[in-house]
Amino acid sequence: MKRLVEQTVWIPPMPDTEFPSPQPERRDWPWSVQSPASGTKSNLPRITIVTPSFNQGAFLEETIRSVLLQGYDNLEYLIVDGGSTDNSLEIIRRYEPWISWWTSERDDGQADAINKGFSRATGAILGWLNSDDVLYPGFLEARGREFEAAPDIDMIYGDVETGVGDASPRAVMKGRQIDFETMVRTLKVPIPQQSALWRRGVLDRVGDLDSRWQVVLDRDFFLRVARYCSLAYRPGVVGLFRLHPESKSEAGQLAWVEELPQLYHELFADPDLPPDIAQYKNQSMVAMERLCAQLLWRHHHFEEWSECIFRAARRSPRHFGRLFLLDTALSKVRGTGRRIKRVTQRGAPL
Image 1 (cartoon, rainbow, N blue to C red):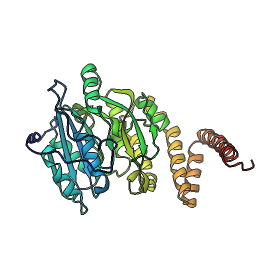
Image 2 (spheres, rainbow, N blue to C red):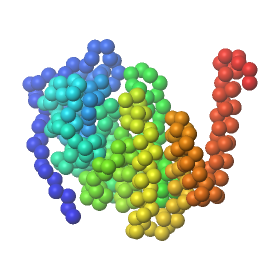
Image 3 (cartoon, helix red, strand yellow):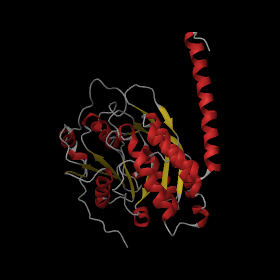
Image 4 (cartoon, rainbow, N blue to C red):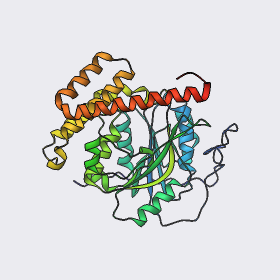
């Protein structure tokens, strides 16, 4: 069924309105730029970015500036706030002249908020940026040109940095070219969400984000995209995936233990799943139990940890044994590395 799109009113920046000044104590992007570039009009496709937000006032302004200061003249920016009670609405109103549409009302979670934004989107290219993450300069123009140059590609993604922001050290979360079969077989979904954009027709083919999920919503969505659409990895760091104690990636780790099994049970219960994919069921489910066990051990849930281990061993002793040996080897390597580090840095004995 063709997706019905509710048209939004396009609100261009007000020429007589001064763009909010950056915070004086910040000198890094996106605080290092005073106002959006007034570049010449291009023929690049309209890109819609949706930002779901709820009580993220500590980071929201940085996220908004990182989008609006891209200087992409065919940008549609939508913010869907879940009824925040902090200073989020004050921040949104400060940037309202440059925001195409926004709302603040109760919703059913992050996926519901994103879907609400996409239902109003008019862009040919879509994506979402969470309200504590950041896009780096030039991202939208680069993606716009990549889509123009590759009309047969449905989704393009790349690499992002991870960290708390500011001047703190950052690591790189690399994407890589992958297909649906490899995602299912290995349980790896190397698509950094902040780096991914896709053509609006993708939603017609795979559907909306599933509002049941709190932490696996992007994994579920990217699995469906990989199953029915074409993907392209373009190397290069394009944004920041912020990690902080209140982020879902940190605070909601145990939710993975609830949602991952359900996601993969439903995947393999699909009667339309091709046989060449369904053959990986035992391998995938053992890997899933292993991942859940690691999270449970990290949070000292030892009884549930042992249940995961026993389920994995019963399901496929061969795959369980292989992963167990891998975990043991990695543990030894990491332990040796930590001891060497103590010797080189503090002169501690091995």
